[in-house]
Amino acid sequence: MSDTTLYWVWLQKAIGCCNPKVKTILRFYPSIIDFYEGGQQEWLLCGCFTKGEFNNLCSTKLEAAQQIVERCNMLDYKIITPDTLSYPQQLKEIYEPPAVLYANGDLPDVDNILSIGMVGTRNATNVGKKLAYSIGYDLAKSGVIVVSGGALGIDSSSHHGALAAEGTTICVLGCGINYNYLMTNAQMRSQIAKSGAVISEYPPDTPPQKYSFPKRNRIISALSQGILVVEAG
Image 1 (cartoon, rainbow, N blue to C red):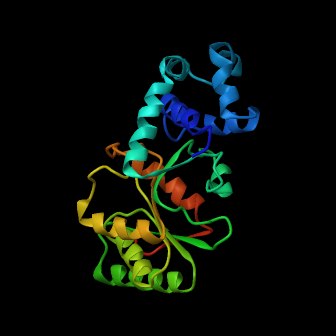
Image 2 (cartoon, rainbow, N blue to C red; image 1 turned 180 degrees about the vertical axis):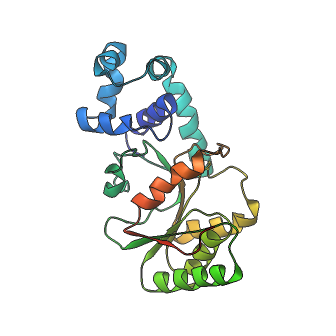
């Protein structure tokens, strides 16, 4: 964990996930601490925050971020921010780069290793699931990182194929990685964390929301040099 981790967690708690203003801060401030210490006057002069965001910046305390950090320490989750070496450069280039990623496992070096996102319908046919498994297996066997979303159907089949090949796969969740979501895949996620990573931009115990799954897709895309849609609805 870097010296600035607490401040990135604070920022995400204040302005929320999926906020493009993270990129503004990365562009115009030497560090997140400079932004934090600028205080209310600096945040006003910045001119990019809504009234609600400004109020949240003023009212959100570092103690709230510290609670999240301590929770991650207890769960042995890593906290990845734009200041940590494991934060992918290609993730910084998207419109809404996450201020924080929480990880169970070690995020592979997707900037230097070919990564392919595999996505598709949750209500997959048997043919679609077999195909996803086979392609996931072959890609992983060839040293490619398989990136998917951990859902039923095509996602799970892709992850299982990569795991069967003893390869590396990344699971990007639309909820906190400690939340009891889709427990039928709990063992799969545990296996993924041993050789790859289960990641989320949401704090560990955050429940899923309707918007959170479409939003996480930008992370799958950003971590991948190509996207394969195996079967769509």
